[in-house]
Length: 152
Image (cartoon, rainbow, N blue to C red):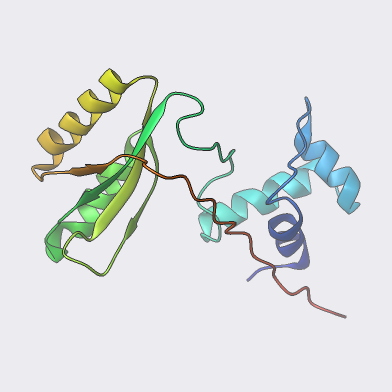
């Protein structure tokens, strides 16, 4: 169950995350709790899982190179392939779509050669072909959301 602290963390720090030597202490100070309470609540949120990761969102191809990649995976193997994809450090996120190409992920690398080698590795290690979809036009969709706080 999400507490008010969980909701405040999820609501208030989707953007403008403090960039300091002790960002979690800065968050704690703003919310009137301890740094340990913030860290525990964030850990709880990833275990439950309400959030999958804490990290920056960087516009595509601003640092290194990236590509959206689609794969057609038989339903019986979808979860195991998705788990394997999620384990790669080059993968930002992956998700299922209701389509013949049902597994999509964003791959990032330092340069085009590393990205190409990584995509070949994915094919080799999963046994399934990939369809890289490099960025042509950049569209930004703000995926922020707001959670209602409990009122005592």
